[in-house]
Length: 308
Image (cartoon, rainbow, N blue to C red; front, side, top):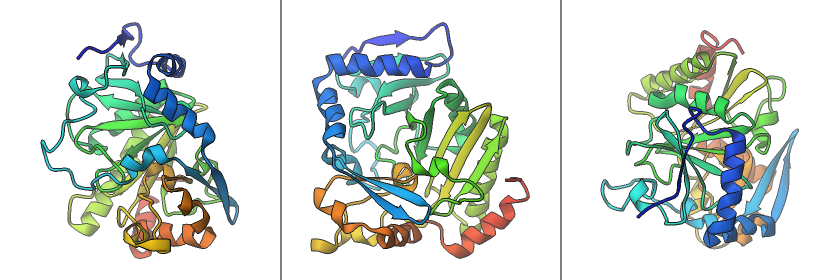
């Protein structure tokens, strides 16, 4: 199966402008993508005020497949939908010289939602690609990147990838040390991408030592803005809240990943929109994020290598 490929040979990776052009082109030549794109503008949106912060609820039925994806994938159980031979015929790819390619996300949550895919078929592993994450953020200045670890939100954990949306959509991006975000996170900032990558690696290693096992329950949100790399490392306790598995009115079909932890809750079921208030938001964050004892230890330790 052949795909239209634009080789960005004059630069290492496409720019935000290149990405925008790709998005517009795909709207013109891919009917399914156009339909899903238009669904965003028909979507019901509500806001939940949580103190000084606001959570965005967005009803997107076309995201149900991602929300209900298996948490554990059996090797070779299914064709990898991010490998070139399995992409839809209409999917266009912006190739780069650095081993990662850019594509539109066929099921966008917001306007200009992209997937950044490793050319090699390797499993999700942020630590092995942490510096690349921030270099990509610099190439795509104006966009916010995010990563879902295999144990917390990655619907395609068998193939390493990041995602990107325009900056300043996620409410977490307005948080700071004086106005901390609603769920526990380690905020890192530096003019040097290596510094931020090392801070996150240290945080990840510390949690692994506490738990004595491979730690794959975390989300990363990051961007490059005004000469600085910024990132929010969000350690997790579990992938899904208990309400996901309940029945009847008590069920909320929510599988929190980076977007939800960052304040944009994607709900595929319309009836769930009216079930969520500030108490539910805080309860779910408390349930799925790292427990207070471990986070306190992490936060204390992080001051040794994170001055913020």
